[in-house]
Image (cartoon, rainbow, N blue to C red; front, side):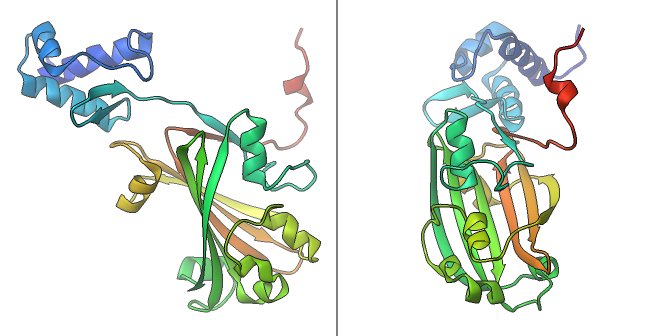
Length: 256
């Protein structure tokens, strides 16, 4: 006899069936009444077990539609190539990478003049509260919310590259646009962190209970000084990042 609470037994049994493919991504689970009969448990017990799976990001629930196995069509981003001008692009880096993966990109924009928050000011080496331009993107892959991206540019750079302050997309990408104006990004510093989403992030990215976000902060540098601070917030269940560093000949070659 298992010593686990009954609701955990329900959750564990369903989790095994999800992992084995009995219930594939996008499929509906049996109703609460059907599961109550199967497990000889009350509907409240079954509901608690299903709620545990929801909190773990394995199952989603909709009012009147029951429970569905979460879909995990993961997008893989090569972070070392992203915005690297030595690689050919058809548009900005995001659109190029998504299209090259055979997926469909879509994004919306807003542009604001904002005082620099303290963490942004520290990264850009400007005074806290000084004027910056914030370019905010809400990005989708195949119409599914993928990420938000908030990039702050210092005011001195906007004076040199005024399109940064204009609303809407910069078709060739801001990194390529700046390079064409003599401000080349020659290096970047990345910071990676995870946490649970804020209510606003959960709303914009349509994140279910129990799913964290991945925060990717990239500070870009010219030869002389920082030129931008970008925070990209990803859905933790639909994204994977990788980096390529050094020679990867052994990874590409055949092994004997």
